[in-house]
Image 1 (cartoon, rainbow, N blue to C red):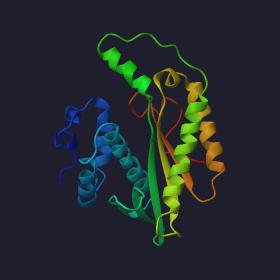
Image 2: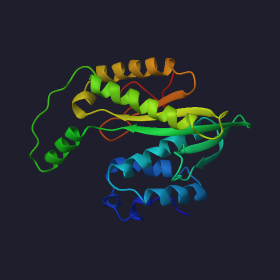
Image 3: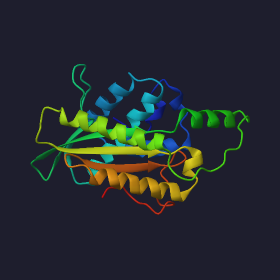
Length: 220
């Protein structure tokens, strides 16, 4: 089917898609019909923030495709076992499983933007340095993804975690914070032996990696 205008097909507020959803439309255009139907079926069962997290799985599909993987498939949810998001073939013979995890803006940051839309927002100063709470969240999210991947039935499959990360506005303003985040993620990646860690940044709701001096999916 035609995947080029997905946001007009679903009964959510997303049907009036702001400009930064154009990037997700581009990601949707990469997937074939069977994957599109699996993706859409799961998406339409979700509400609230889970909708947006589901869309981030498209970044996993794009990463695998960019990496030269074949037979890329979205895996359907299992009510008994937690499933990885994607299965693919790398180098013709090696199965690869990939789990996408989102690190989203805090509720306080979302509230600020809601108030801004109502002309009620108060100014917030830039914050230098990543909070311990954010670092814990990244660490815990990574550990959760590892547990999910190692429980998959095919124990020999290559395992990849893709973190899609957005900082709060007061953190995102400073390029120094993004560089600190980069160093922290590399530290986590170096400590992993059973999985490969890849990450992707969102800044102010869009892909701003070139402005940050960063390009493509990032890893060690």
